[in-house]
Structures are given as structure tokens and as C-alpha cells.
Length: 251
Ligand SMILES: NC(=O)c1ccc[n+]([C@@H]2O[C@H](COP(=O)([O-])OP(=O)(O)OC[C@H]3O[C@@H](n4cnc5c(N)ncnc54)[C@H](OP(=O)(O)O)[C@@H]3O)[C@@H](O)[C@H]2O)c1
Image (cartoon, rainbow, N blue to C red):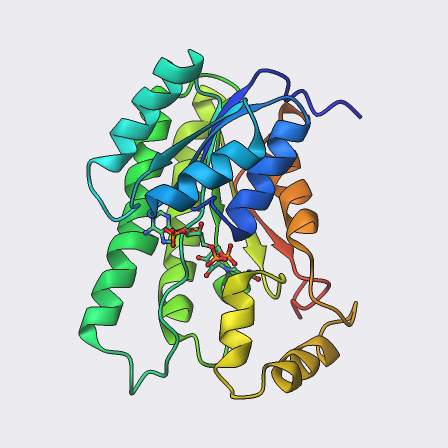
């Protein structure tokens, strides 16, 4: 199947490593051009070099109110068009309801929530028919994850925002999708497993609860996200797609 990605232009935020990086890689492999971001200038340069000539890297923090417009302009300046955006970002601080501080909630709200809202809004204003806005969210949209209280609080709200946006943008032929990872083997998930003091035991316990009995690979996530962002997924909007090896208990 031809995904129709050739020469299409995407922004992927939070893409110097992990899920964003794997998605940028999958998009480029099928002929797309991509602007990638992360906060650390050196990592951005290295990741863009490694992904090749169809990728431009920009150091940008999703929490910065000026970033959304700057990225949209960079896509037009660098590649002459914009076809879609995938919004990924570093995950919120772990913790319990009792322990998470106001500062942790505020910081996560700025980068994970409001940053995503701003990026989606700026992209929506710039996209034409066939455009797409994707949010990397979490299985916590549907079911709370122990020890990730801030994620449990913010992700369902972002899914609600994505649904509102899908309703508003549908008449213009612009799609909005959410991608819900659960346990994909990235640095973030390894760091979370290490919090228990025994990363291997934590991973084994998590894997035992996944129907496919293993963590997903970033490549498996990247292929799914690239498909959802592609013209091949042209009738999919307003949906939340779990990439979780069957972990979600609901239908
Ligand atoms: N992996 C999973 O299975 C899983 C499951 C559920 C939810 N998620 C969510 O999916 C998202 C991506 O996860 P991941 O595993 O890919 O995480 P990751 O391995 O920590 O990668 C995060 C990427 O985002 C960049 N980043 C962090 N904060 C940023 C900011 N404020 N602005 C712009 N870029 C930023 C990081 O680079 P810099 O640090 O240099 O900025 C890095 O490139 C997270 O929000 C995570 O909570 C992941």
C-alpha cells in the first residue's frame, strides 16, 4: 500500500528520541519531509543529521507560547508547505495525588496540555484540506496508570480537546487523531521502570499484564502514527488509537 506520504511536510515535536523520533523516521522512510523539535539544541542537531536531508531540526520547547507559530512558519520557509503535525512532548512527572506539587502540575500543564493546544491551533489555522493533527497521548486517556497521576489528570482532557477540534475542523477536511501508547520501549518507559528500584522486575510485571506479553518497539508505534498521519487514513478522524499490545480492557 502506498501511504501517499511522498513530499508531504510534517512537524513532529518532541522528536529527538522516543516516539516522536520513531514517527519522524517512519514518515521520512516513505518520502515525507519533517521538521523535528526537542529542547536540547545539540540533540536536535544530532537527531536531524541522523534522520537525513529531508529533516530540519529546531530547538523548541512546547511550553513556549511563541513556538507554535515559529514551527508553522519554519515548515513553509524550509519546505514550502505544511500537511500535518504530530504533537509529542516529554511526559509529566510521576507521583501520587498526595505527592505531586503545584509546580509539577503547572509545569506539565504548560508543556503537555497548553503547549499541545497552542500547536494544534496554529497548525489548524495553516492547514488546508487533507491536513492532519495528531496528539501523542497515553493509555491513561481511558484507564488511570498507577504512579502517573498528572498524566491521568491531563490526558483525558486533551482527548476531549482533540474531539472538539475534530468536530470543528472536519468540515474543512482536516483530520484530528490521538495515538495512545501504553508500554513502548523508550527511554521514558525505562526511566519509569527504574523508579521501582528494580527495573527488570517492574518490566516483567508490566509485560505479564499485556496480552502480547511484551513492550512495543518505537518502530511499531512510529509505523502506526505515520499511517494515521498519511493520506491513506483519509476517513479516520476524532479517534483515539491504542498502541498497547492489547492492554486496554475496553473495546
Ligand atoms: N513510551 C510510552 O510507552 C508512553 C506511554 C504513555 C505515554 N507516553 C507519552 O508519550 C510522550 C513521548 O514519550 P517518549 O517515550 O517518546 O518520551 P521520551 O523518550 O522521554 O522522549 C521525549 C522527547 O520529547 C522531547 N521533549 C521533552 N520535553 C519537551 C518540550 N517541553 N518541548 C519539546 N520537546 C520536548 C525530548 O527531548 P528534550 O528533553 O531534549 O526536549 C525527547 O525528544 C510522553 O508525553 C509520554 O508521557 C509514552
